[in-house]
Length: 113
Image (cartoon, rainbow, N blue to C red; front, side, top):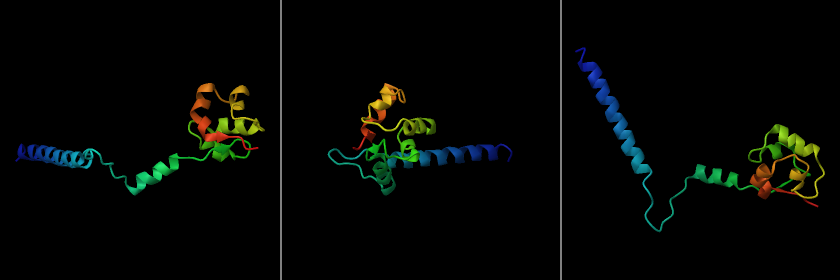
């Protein structure tokens, strides 16, 4: 009996692991050629969140600026303190952002007249 229980438990773990592995393989099977995979509702919502309207540098709140990818609270405060802006590129010329950081967000910011 002492040898049976550990062997039995090990077999159960392996069989459950294989069953879950086979189930996950079926769920992630590639779509047929020429068809697009179906996207679930939660994934669609996440995709919508990623598409952002450009944020006005002169009118945005610090919270809106923090929502830009890669920007933290301190940088958002610096952007707000450096207002007004005539062009988004002034974030680099005023040394608020590095050129690399600006390149990541330049499509997400604008300056409205």
